[in-house]
Amino acid sequence: MTMNPFEFRTVPAMEVAWGGAQRLGEILKARFSAQNVLLVTDAGLVKAGLIAPIAQNIKAAGLNVTIFDKVVADPPEHVVHGCVDEARKAGVNIVVGLGGGSSLDIAKLVAVLLQSDQPLSEMYGIGNVKGSRLPLVLVPTTAGTGSEVTNISIITTGETTKMGVVSPQLYADYVLLDAETTVGLPKVHTAATGIDAMVHAIEAYTSRHKKNPLSDALAREALRLLGANLIAACEDGSNRAAREGMLLGATLAGQAFANSPVAAVHALAYPLGGHYHVPHGLSNALMLGPVLRFNAKAAVPLYAELADVLGVSGTGDAEKRSADFVAHMEKLMDASGAPRRLRDVGVTDNSLAMLAADAMKQTRLLVNNPVEVREEDALALYREAY
Image (tube, rainbow, N blue to C red; front, side):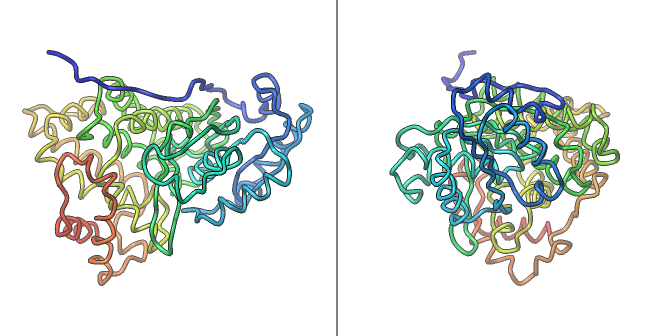
């Protein structure tokens, strides 16, 4: 059988090192000539005491460090611009994103904007970024978004709408996976971000247009690692093996979906973040069950393969194994302790039609879904999740 042509891209360097963040200064000194570091993070990590020793280590290596800690979930454009302004004043020449997906997304865009006269408004969409960027290092502290290895930044552009910048310039120069930084993550965040990563693997594996053998291999291994470690990481947040498995799994899923893009789960999740400020990972977890069942009519053979990847017990034809896979994912989500219904996170019944209309604007994502999603389908999926 001949192979469809495909292109695969990812970051040039990735290091897995327990405790590596505590040596970040030495790592930066050895790898880059830049002296003035911008550390992009959020106030919660500063308050938790995670940032101070890392910043101290950077200073001890003889580098200057400016900390920007105003990143919030679903960051709006003014956070990007505020960060660029502070970085310019400090004369930074290397950007380090350290935190959850929002901090990493901001760091990626700021590294570009500090080198470019192009306005952010012209960068939205696919392949619209012109020019280069400053050196960029990303250190994730959640095992979820995979943002550390994607070429995507998601920004809240209006009261409730999100837009993406997708461009090769957003791939970092160096990614550090230090699972020790995820140890303090509370159970509900561990659950939601872990399920988010599983969504990335599943959607990459079933993506309609750019699915390819490399993204498939990464998605399968990601799902295997995540499925094997999710409950252990939720039940004991200090379990090193589980934390390392979750973080590597999330990163592999990020590499998969950066090349074989996500679809309807994400398209339906974004309006929940926009209107109700439901965290991204949790909004994906809430929509996963209904979308899996909706897509099953087209994805049966692929879901059957994923049942085997997850070690789901049982036998039977592809139809039966596909159903086993969906049931297993439901069981995992129930056991994780994450909220399971839209009503549990404050979504109101009378807003479902508005959410469905909003989801239809996510054409960049919906085009990848194995089954066409019309507005009435989106409404039915929200009702099912409600």
